[in-house]
Amino acid sequence: MTRSRLVPVLLLSVALSGSALGAGPGDYPTYGCVGSKLAAAAADCASAFRAWSAWEDSQDAARRDAALAADAAALAQAFARADDKSARRGVDCSETTLSGSAMGALIDDGVRSAVASINAGLDLDRKPQVKCGSRLLDAAGAACRAALRAEGKYILTLGDTTPKKAQRDRSLQKARAAFDRAFAAATNGSCPTTATSETLGSALGAFVNQVVTNTTVSPTLPLGVWQTITPPAEVSYLGQTLHPICARGGPYLYFARRGTVNKLLVYYQGGGACWDGLTCSIPACTQTAEAADNPALVTTGLGDPTNPANPFRDWNAVFITYCTCDVHWGDATFAYTDGGNVTIEHRGAVNAQVVEKFAREHFVNPDEVFVTGSSAGAYGAIANALFLRQRTYRGARFNVVGDAGNGVITQDFQQNFLSRWGIDKNLPRWIPALDRPFTELSIVDLWSAGANFYPNDRFGQYTSAYDGGTGSQSNFYNIMLNPGDFAAGLQWWHASCQWNAIMRQQAQETAAAASNYRYYIGAGSRHTIFGSNKVYADTQGGVIPFVDWIAAMRGDDPAWPNVQCNPCNLVAGTCSASSANAGASCQDNTDCPGGSCQGADPRPNPLVPPFGPGGVVTCP
Image (cartoon, rainbow, N blue to C red; front, side, top):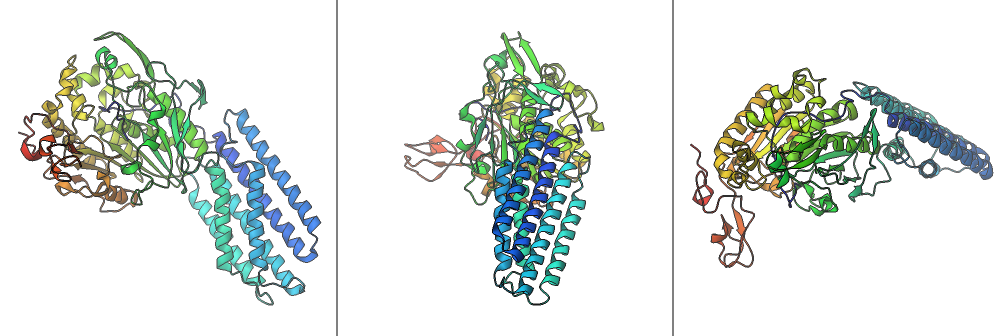
């Protein structure tokens, strides 16, 4: 899911943005708002069951309906109060949840369904059966109230260093056990209900999950559809006023999608980088955010929501568009005069925080978060993931994967150009190993320090062995090796072997420094894998398919491996239908008379070392 119109990127170091680092306020307004709404929902659910329990005996529908109407009104008022309180603290909570009236309707439907289940088989003209039905409704109401209270209390702890998930789980188990005991006591006699403790308990659990989902996953987002979000010119977040913007001052936009499971994919888009007047003027990076960036336009690889093998097909997702030429790390305005005259708004970290705010207010408490990005987005993924992990999603299972952003740079670039992006002021300094000037840090430090600080999470990087072509890693590295000579980047193969050697060394050093970090080095020279169908089946060079590697990572498989191709030669393509050799394997267009070679790895034309005939790569 890198850009097709401009290609991605380069390098190393560290950071995210904003002056509000580390923990962030434990009482973030959304947590208090959602916690209050769940408490109100718990009270409404219990009251609704009580109204139906009283009706069991009296059969007074008017009295029951009046009680239900009063409950619905109280719930709507409680939701409005929670929204107002959050708004006074600068956060709109109305989009986070269903409205009070819609939640009331959801609870009413759930309670009526439970009533129908309990009364199935009962004769309400018989007092013993009426008593049983009433007792079962009271038990259901108590279970609903206890479960929603537990969920609400847990949400209130999301700002804590360690959210109290175990305490919530114990409370849910106690609520279910109490319901099972009450069910057994109520049905120990004349009570021919067709409901069972298991069926009714499961139905109540599913109903509670519906209520929780509709207060923690924004129902205002369309289901399964990428929505374009255009933020206002000023965004208040964690005591800051953020100004989302693109490199040349143009407007910023990003995308979000609601899925069907409570998991969140956070993806950082690629699109190159620039650091002097020449690279920023050509430009060597994407400088606008447009409707054409919509991830819905990507229908391959892990961007394909219709592929049953795609582990992220049903997830909630945010897509952080890229237009600032700073690998999502910058927080500075820089006027370039060397090689060209251009002023660039390096505000990638600012834009990332704008999306972070949206995510935490629309996807409040995901069970699992997977942070990734391709090319420039790979750097954005690791730097921003540390902030997401520390201050936003402390209760989630966390995984981070960089796709084709391995941080092979020159010393000159690190010492003399990175500062132009304004990243030093925003290092994740709560991690002791990173509490140093960025000029003293490497990509190995960033990944290993992050992984060691969060030992229960998993971190990993993907790259092809010779990542090449326009906009590739070796492309940008060759530009750094030849300052001021942009044409050198077009001859990226001159840096292929040197880039490969440094990349491998860094990957191995990181793996040795952090036990919860792994690397994946695939065959060939293709830049990025996330949007390629290679993720599902590529095994060239003895590697396992990338989706299998991801599955082992997410599953905490002790056998989750470091993957390294051998041999790492170029991956062939397929001759187009117009070719006389249609469907045949090919290395380049000369193998496909009358047509073209599609999908073959980048290589120089004509071939020059280290690239030889048949896709063989030979480094000294």
